[in-house]
Amino acid sequence: MALTLTSPAFADGEKIPRTFARDGENLMPPLRWTGVPEGTRSLVLVIEDPDAPRGTFRHLGIYDIPFDQSGLSQGADPGAGESFRFARNDFGNKAYDGPQPPPGHGVHHYYFRLAAISEPRLGIRDEVGVAEVWEKATRHLIEEVTLVGTYER
Image (cartoon, rainbow, N blue to C red; front, side, top):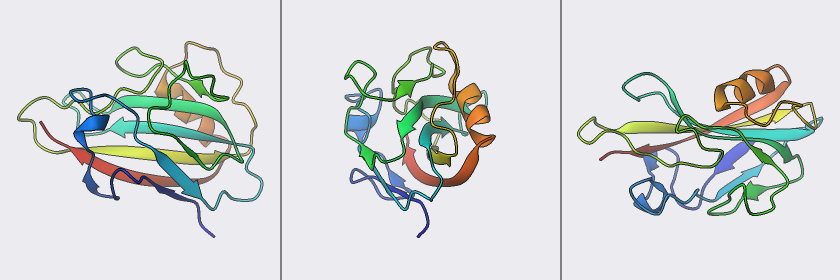
């Protein structure tokens, strides 16, 4: 069975509800995954917007997610006693920050990328950015899956 990533909040290729945008409640959408491949020791999740005016903008990076976890609840945040770690996003926060494309810039695509990796911990410092987390995770990649949501202001 292949690794799958879904959200009960939006379907692949569909609009992300305003509740999950920065101009809404800025809550992280709930996510579910299945089919974690054999040999996976942990998971990594990033959210990227390649349509940003200055190039790819990273909204979230979570790493050291236990391999036996099957998803993330709505509003998951670093202060909730979770067993995983947050990287610093491009807003400068160690948290989820939802879509906030410039008004009138058109539809932006948000890539929720989940990686199953062969290491239980990435062993990186606390102040690391999302791009560095993803780069290190791909060195230990077993399988990757992507869920895409859209948003426009």
